[in-house]
Length: 186
Image 1 (tube, rainbow, N blue to C red):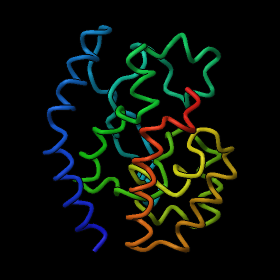
Image 2 (cartoon, rainbow, N blue to C red):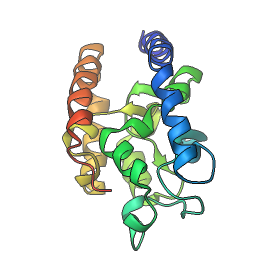
Image 3 (spheres, rainbow, N blue to C red):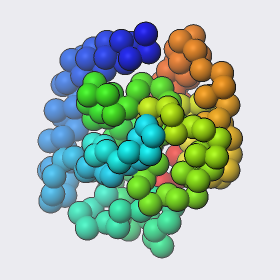
Image 4 (tube, rainbow, N blue to C red):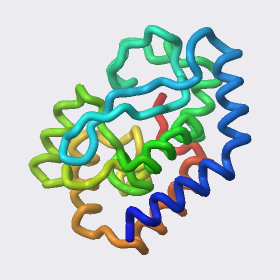
């Protein structure tokens, strides 16, 4: 049932948001040279790597690491990129990843290929059996503000409590959180 809801939700989202996606893609291209999308190597279900699209929020040539690990993140993030990150608009292309089955609408956020600390904690808790999500339990409990052990603990809680009703509640809370920009550090 979850996969069916993912397909339905991603299809509807891509269709309804296509004007927004187009405007953002054009705006990214006009702001700085480079492609509109950044394809990031992420860890998916059963620790398989997959390419995940995001609207490019950083200048081309930025290191492929978690933003908080950059010595001066502000020097890499574009003005439009900062806005897209605060509102989570940079994440909208991931509806494609949901549609093709690399991701789910709700699940643990996909780790970067080099976030070994997070992956070790998730693997110890059995979380690797889940498809990563466009949003998740940890996302609505702090986003970037959470230390890695807390993210992994919340991902394990989601694994234990997951249900369709919980997923719907997380989606509603995500919309509220995204519009407020709360919990985004960079």
